[in-house]
Image (cartoon, rainbow, N blue to C red):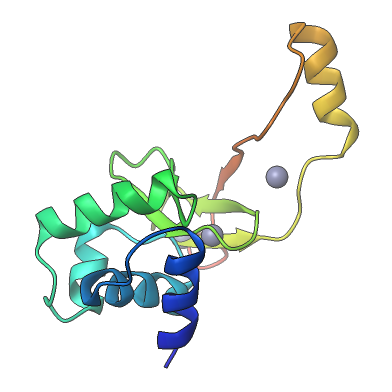
Length: 135
Ligand SMILES: [Zn+2]
Ligand SMILES: [Zn+2]
Ligand SMILES: [Zn+2]
């Protein structure tokens, strides 16, 4: 499942579709959720070693296939960079939810005006709170 999708995405990114890359990309697409390297290892049933996962994630990041998510928990999380979205994190149990809302379109223009930059290409925005299981 998803094999064709992964191969097509790798080719479109100009990458050779090796078995390891297909496996890793497939796991990230299947999960649609920020993944730690340990999560990825478990999900791929230890078929990939940690060094390979890190190396492959770096390549994927360069090609914008994967995005590194900073959720201030002191560990790096990665997710498939399919569609732009944000997250909310429970500061008590660590639950992460995707958010389909984004900043108002006018904000990039305001940032440009205030900063004097000629272009704003992207932004990162994560929310922190307490989930309904932890109140
Ligand atoms: Zn919670
Ligand atoms: Zn996400
Ligand atoms: Zn956004």
